[in-house]
Image (tube, rainbow, N blue to C red; front, side):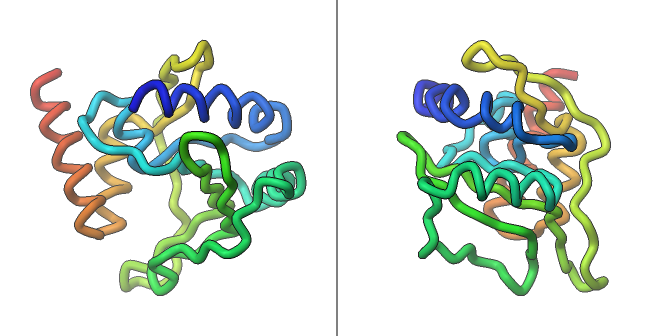
Length: 157
């Protein structure tokens, strides 16, 4: 798994770092994995601003998976695009919002940490932030990842 993730990080993140003007971070299963949780990673989820998502879509036009429709449209909305990379897809969520019953709220990350992978410093939410975000998403897969991260934090602390 780490080899595949390193490959997509080496391929996707350097151009992302050059084009993004606003803070961005890896979230989801890849962030949980990079934090040390034993999770499977099917894609690399990137949280960006709406403007950076638009720049990314323009720059990666030839990689766009135009037929892909993300699940959960009733709970999530963003300037979303999925891009084909060798190993796993990259999903960019610009200005991601969550509707967990209180109307649309922006998904924000309060504390970031840098994790070194493939020779790059990759920003991910801290473990407590990942737990908070995953629990707010409320899907079974997110709650499972949050539980794994909680257990990881308990053994580390």
